[in-house]
Length: 592
Image (cartoon, one colour):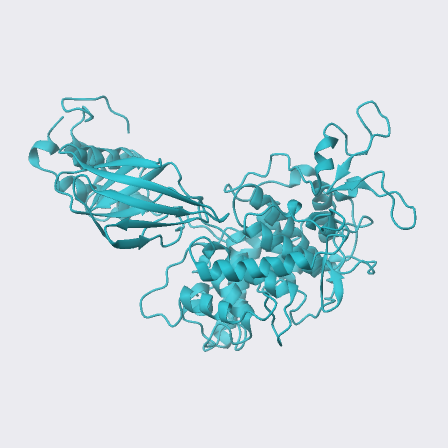
């Protein structure tokens, strides 16, 4: 709603009371505006590693084994609006890559000559150990994705076809759906969600006590992430709440009953949309973080069994803890040690090994770990050769059929290796947008502070020395949004008391815990901790203004849709605005 300025400075010509009355439907809000359409959706799995029960080698799904032609670029369309992958993705492992601008995908220059180009830090003129010319275009991300989707489809028109969906929920299906969804590749997600819904409903009917599993909490975690990637709601799948049953009120007992990976994936599921843990729950974020930290082994990494650090498990620990790196010194120390362990494991070819075998999955997991920390995987290179993690992953791509092989000795593509390679590529692309692949929340609002005093909401433009104007009677405030980055943290000092950020919520807000006492002239000292390890010092000066409260209420009402466009989702905002309006003095209410 936009209105002309009226009798009081900054006030609109239309009386505040009239606007509030127009927005207040009275009676049953739900009945007045109707029910919004519900969304469907769900997805899949737990460790995503060859360390699952399928074993290191994994079995290739029969329906995925046939090669087919390439999928058209027009089929790769956005499933989510959160990240736009339409921009050209520049992949570089070495400085030479950037000198290749202008070369086409075939490896020839604009004049048709045999000009050298670089892809993933590899020259198309380089030869392998046997003298064979390297194929630079085999390393192009879009080529990999198109041919891999074609391989996954086989003779079917979609990857998520009826035969595939009959296996939902499982490691073999869920990670595929997750990977495709996070890459924004169009497919039958509604079919996947329907299959997941039926699977959960049937599983709970067969075993009401344990639901999806009597021993593996990751069954809930995997499906949570899959549901989200497909556009669904994991708190309502087959009539069950996957977050509650798999994490904070875990049906099988400790979420880590199966091992530390239960804590990794429980934390990832809980943080995926910033789900709140209700009071009285059996487990919370601190419990999961504590278990992960206490499970670190000598050498700086993590393992599922024994005391020898493992690449896959270490990578998972790093990306589970990544959101807490900026604001928790103990987490920071643990993650730094984990990243050092991973860096030390990079071979001259850019890949990593687990259980003695260099393989696609360990390399993919490491890419995801660095990406979650905001570190460009193409910049993480072997000190010996300069080849990057993306170079290491690219060598497992099967140029004959599409898909990715488990080891370089394998002739055929492997379904598990392919799933993990796909979501490693997705993680790289999310990293380029400043986001994590595991993060389904709205990006943070770095443009302004949002402050509450009672039911009135105030705003202040973001700056290192911001000024907040509040009503004359305001004695305490809540910071509902502090304008920091997606994975940053902050502390606000008021006198001798320190208030800390609580983590980003689903709508992108970054609140500060607690109620902060203020008066006219109060200067709040703010320390911002960035994910990259740097710190910044800000101030927020509070000033009282007799007209500030009324202006804030007007902004609250103006930010709402017109009355005819209200939906059920606006109900809380309408009620808050009405309450704030009613708290105004009579002169302020009629000030227009």
